[in-house]
Length: 520
Image 1: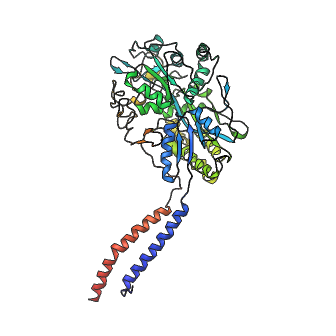
Image 2: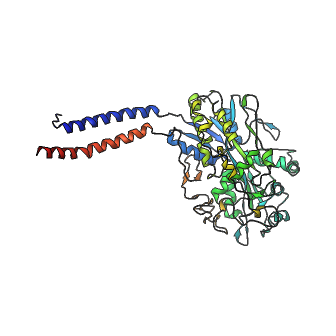
Image 3: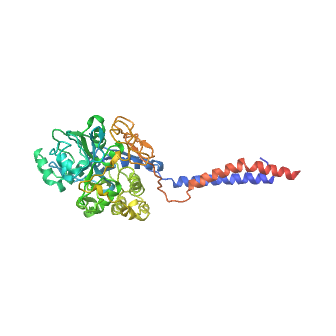
């Protein structure tokens, strides 16, 4: 095309240059794009709400992280058999459970902390037609409830913990896990260490001798067994199942809109498993190490006996079991994906732990975890650095700002009236079980939408349901970034496109008009 006007020729030349730049920048962005192969894992339902949210978060970066919350024991078995790339469990290998030893995998592996939280006691009881939402329980009472020693809600031992409540003359129905679970292991470990005489007497009664920590709860008449965390929490949340109580990760009580019991700690205060209470408690945890650094397992004696008034006694964390060698179907390409995902959830992902009903891992566990990530075949080690890790607990103010319990939470004649767990901030009575509102826009409760209040919105955030598992998480989405902050190649591409549009549509008519005026 022969363009005579020199101004128009310069415009066309500029557009051509911009188009060339767009091609170059598009090539740069394509070169910068990271490709990931899909990976699959299985295990803990205790940790599933956090994992499901995190794996949704990283899909925008091309990561496909599959996960089936089949229980800790199944996850360990699948990893051992090589049918999954990673597993999540609250239980390490080597546990002797009911006379059977859980042997180690033949391939190289390591444990890595993934998320912390509190094993909570979610319950469904009413008195005088109103839902009780501020129950308190001491450790020996909890142990006696789950071993059949205390069978009525108006038992004098429960009444002693709750001077402000009129408790119903109703049978207690403990709901336990029917599958091999980390929740059961964490709960029974606590009972065996803190209330050994009660737990051992129960184990002898059911023919298990001194069972100590077990992943399979031994049941008696009057108990109900359900699979997975979704199963036990969903059962308790049903309107027809009044009188029930279960042990489950705090996140599930938030999701179902139900309260949890405040548990008496060693400082003499009844506390709830909030994120900061769990984080403070875990300052008393010790990390067990063995040669080869396979084991980053937890010693929780210092957590159980932590005398900080803010401590929640049943605080712990979950492990991801990761390969340390490429073998079978696990390749370095899969390791690249697994390491990138691990680096994300140990750092940025921990910012969502609180709103999901968990607690961010303390700094010592994050640092230890990042060292394990480096051992995964295919890991891009240069990108793994504690100094660039965006984890809230790396700021000491996270712990110093944790609020002290109210004086009405102290062991004694008074009792706080505030609701707990998913019932906090909402209306009173039986609304949670009937789909009524149990949380305001700024509270931690949820708005139920069915007979058991299983779905809804937390705060002002959206409800997101996972297509693979059917699990819905009600969280406020937080911004995340896996690349270094700054002006990326894609930013240049977008800017170039806008610039070209402006040149083509706006500038030429203006210049043509100006040229015509000069000819006059």
